[in-house]
Image 1 (cartoon, rainbow, N blue to C red):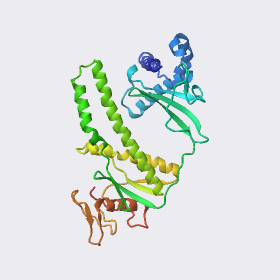
Image 2: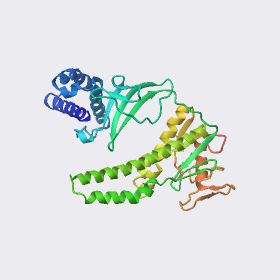
Image 3: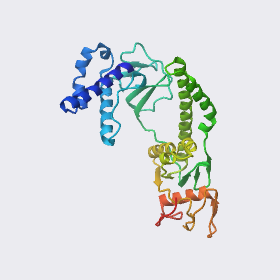
Amino acid sequence: MLADFCGLYNACLQQRIEAYRRRGVALRYAQQAAELCAVRAEEPALARWSFTALQQVLRRVETTYTAFFRRKRGFPRFRAASRYHAAAFRIGDGLRLLKTGRLAVVGVTGGIKVVWHRTFPPGAKLGTAVLTRQLGKWYAVFSVEAEFGGAHGVGDVGLDLGLNALFATSDGHSEPAPQFERRAHKAQRRRQRALSRCKRGSRRRDEARARLAAGAARISRQRRNHAHKLSRELVSRYARLAFEDLSAAALARSRLARSIHDAAWRTLVNMTTYKAESAGAVVQLVDPRGTSQTCPSCGAVAAKPLALRRHTCACGSDLDRDVAAAQVVRDRAFGPGYGLWSLSVRVAA
């Protein structure tokens, strides 16, 4: 099925290129979708699959073209069947859920056995499903409209993101930084060396590449699982949360790249944001400049080297450096009631 979908994707891409090259015509989704019935009549291999699933392939081409014209780079490329991993379906049209708990896909004989991650919420409305192949395993990802909101906590908190600790909160809690990649680094280096010794195009090289990819996928799952648990805990504890708006992509180009990738700050912030939205809580991002140089009590600004992990001020404030920065983040986000509202002068980062 994926091979046929990939062939249709490449054919649509080729048609668009040739139409513009020969006649200056820019084809759109509606024009190509109008020819789909004739294509299915000429190609029996495509006729056995769901019509709406084939339409999703055309929409995928349209989305790729739209993204290219928006960013002005990365012209759509032809896809190899081995790199075409996903197919989208409408629930009830091309893909059905059987009472036995299996999936029925048009063109696939019999029901597909499924190991369910969890049951659907009561009253859930199913929209679309994506069948995807990842490292030799198959997954079905469902788009569901339902009430997922959970209860949120009370109070406000600021969080200072870091590497010594994943984050420090304004009320004094410090979360240890995860080290998933560092713990798996030795094994991943061994798999990488095994891959480099294999002959290109050989079966052993494919197996070595699969083992390396499986190791990287395991690290990714660990990071996401950790971020899911922490974000749920934060939303359950607080009603309003403030994070530093850090540019993780820029920082990841430094010599601290491994630790920054392990921390996965952006993943944690994104997960906390959508969980807070569904629970009725609030997440705000604030300018990170000067948060660790500012006193949360009096607002005095004094540069401190990274080696100095304690904040002390002439006003009598004596706090852990990260906790003090978290309090400044909280004050910038939520205003009067704690201390500072915002900084009005340029300060060192």
